[in-house]
Image 1 (tube, rainbow, N blue to C red):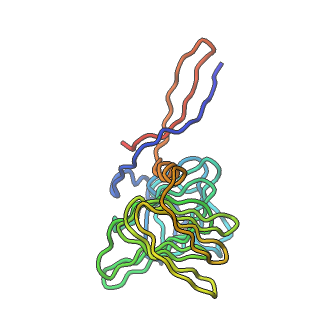
Image 2: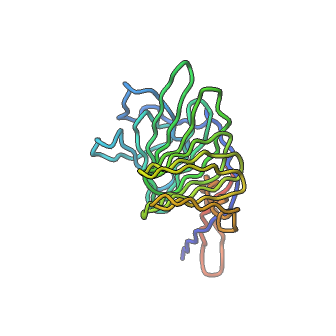
Image 3: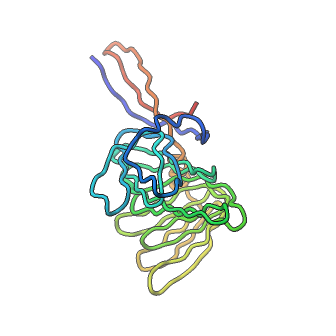
Length: 239
């Protein structure tokens, strides 16, 4: 008899842009648009499409290039790791999330915009060069970040949550009433659908979510027991 147990081991992510890019012959991609990022890792059910106007979601695989306007969607118990072509950041797209990738180049600088339609994103973003911008956008909030790692969550009720382990973020509410704020490392902000900013120091739940957002490599081990073989699926550091 074979039993299956799934659990998580919290571990850091070590990732390189040039390793494991996989098969480049994964079509369709829009070759008329500039390459912004690359899918470094997929686990379980991950799909992509070229734009909001594209009616077809297709299976996303390692090495898939992502251009301006492309979208990623993760299913239950699924994960995608995205790395930007200039090495400026890593995004870990958690389960049941939709991410839109946008970017424009100007004077050899790449401005990046990750639009989170729903779900949770773990991120590690390097300090940007002068004149470059890296921002997260949701339907209600824009967050400009630099030298930052943490997580961002956008719920179905349009509640925005961001927590930073390091760095800082400038926040602005997109509603007609406006509103701005600054989030610093070791802190969390919750922005309600009506634009109310609620700042606090990180609590244990926030720190647990940051640890969860760093998990990125699924492995399996098998243990023989008197009742049969137990299959254990877990997350560990990338090799």
